[in-house]
Image (spheres, rainbow, N blue to C red):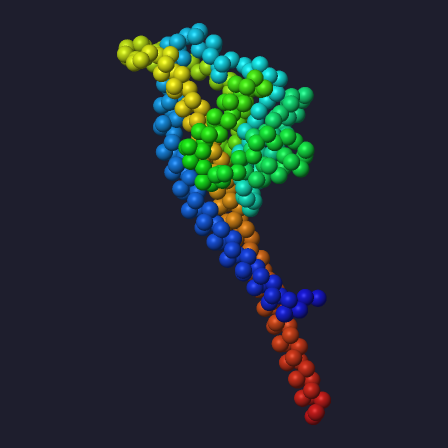
Length: 290
């Protein structure tokens, strides 16, 4: 039977855990707002550069398919950039992405994969299963990565694709949709999928004077387009991670509060029982002395 001292210690431990999870929830909320603002601020630029690439591709026509980044690679392997978290305590954020990976591998049996990884949890998951990690991005850490870091990552993937080793490159990350919804996503990265522009957009492009020319602008714009896609994937993954951690820590705080209340009820009942027993002993002793 649990003693009063044990109950008191358990109540204290649960209270300490509640304080820690509450503090982690507040930290996650603050960082979530920061990364969410960055993700929202980057969307107009992403949409605009995507539209420019689309309109220029329509203007160039069949010449686009002759460029190496728009044609399937000559290799027989697949490169996957996996974006996970560096730390745990973020609910099912990582496990949902790992389920997505296993489903992809089951649907593509026999395909040889080389992994490019952001996040220690993803690296640990792959190495424990004996899967080859071609490159593990450590510096800068995912939380400190800016557009320049995303550009370096994009260049690594582009160089790997142009080397002729891979037939395509895929990005596996978690897309942020809302505070309570973050979806594991498979993003085809290379070769670039040709996006058709609307007729109205094509007419607008035709009315614009392009200097030096459409082909030169297009070739300079494509690397920026790829860098933006990687940057957005990293930002959305970070935002999803902290949204998941905030929810997880809030649930842990609420559970600790409920557990503490339940333990206090047991403690008070146990204490009252002991007081009653002591009173009965005193009354019994008094009656015995009469």
